[in-house]
Length: 152
Image 1 (tube, helix red, strand yellow):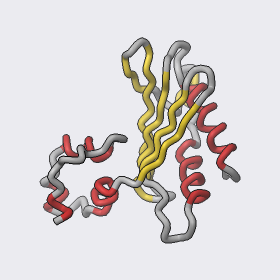
Image 2 (cartoon, one colour):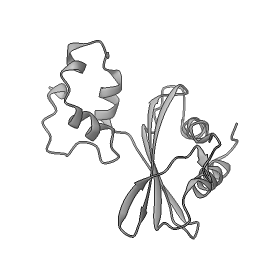
Image 3 (cartoon, rainbow, N blue to C red):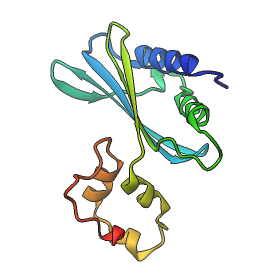
C-alpha cells in the first residue's frame, strides 16, 4: 500500500492532524507490533495544557472514517526489515506537534516479545498481574530493576 518511508510518515501525520481536536500541544501514537501483518495496537493520545487525553484515529470531525495507520506501520516494518528473520522493532512512538514537526522512535522490547510468545491458555499467562502487563505494553516498558523471572 505504502511505497516509501516518507509517504508513511506523511500519511500518519495527516491522519493524526485530522483526528485531533482544535487545540493541543503535542500528540503521539504508541505502536505495539503484536503479530506482524495481523495484529497491531495503536495507543493515540494528545496533551493539551498539561493534561493527557485519548483521541480516536478512526474519527475525523466526529465522523467515523477508518484510518489505515495499521497498514502504514506494517509497511514501515517491512521496509525497515533487512531480511525475513530480522525484527527491526516491536514498539514505535510517533510524536507530532501542531506546527507539523514530528519524530519517531523505534525499539525492540524483549519483555514485550516474551509476553507476545506466551500461550494465553497457559498458567504462566493466567498468573501475570494486569499492572505488569500494562507496563510491558507501555512505551516505557518494565523498569530496568524489575525482577524478570522469565529470564532465569
